[in-house]
Image (cartoon, rainbow, N blue to C red):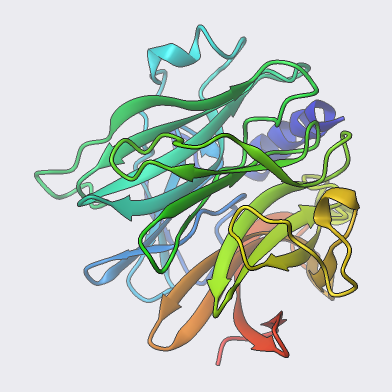
Length: 325
């Protein structure tokens, strides 16, 4: 099922005009850039950055979270890490759903690559000491594969999500349809997985993907998307959550139901112009919890765009406020 959705996603992305190599960088006011699967936003010096689905991986910067600039893609046109060719068949350079975290003085950019019509997918990681292409130290160096999938029973190796715990340990969640959502701890030196992968949500080819872990107080919150993305105005994506006192689960919803058994408390769904919201990322800054998502704009022919919500907690459960405070 997922690969049919992915095919639609590619066609929509190309039609909607996600920046390609030929278009090059350029400014866009507000959050109106056509963008899909935005990563966790990073702030380096006085500039904000996120990365998203696109040819070579879309890179976008902003001085103020309001005016955005499409920057040079991470991988040059027609080039990508060679290991992908022997791992993912028919890969053409269109990367999906990256995520970014800073460790050991470097930025680690995790990315997805997959093939249409088959469950063959892989997640890799590249590192750079800076996000700024104008810096003399700017250089993305690929560190190879993190995880892969081959058959439908596997966790489909796309949609990586990274979280640093309060003790400095880093956790990794990923997956889409197929075997559900997997979680593991990351070796913060290599950026690779250091523990076995555990299923924490979904399974049986149900519609779970785009997972994100958030720590607040004693709880770990697993945000995941249900429904179907990538169908523009007909997208049915919505965000659910479960919580646990362990980053590896089990994650239960407000009724006590495990997310591996179909549980999940809804925190955000289609509302007005915001069709099919998804792909949570969290930026903590100045005492605020700023959540980034993408949505399909009902007032702009279903184009996929970036939006923000304020994350708060009520009686131990997350709430995504309509606007930033």
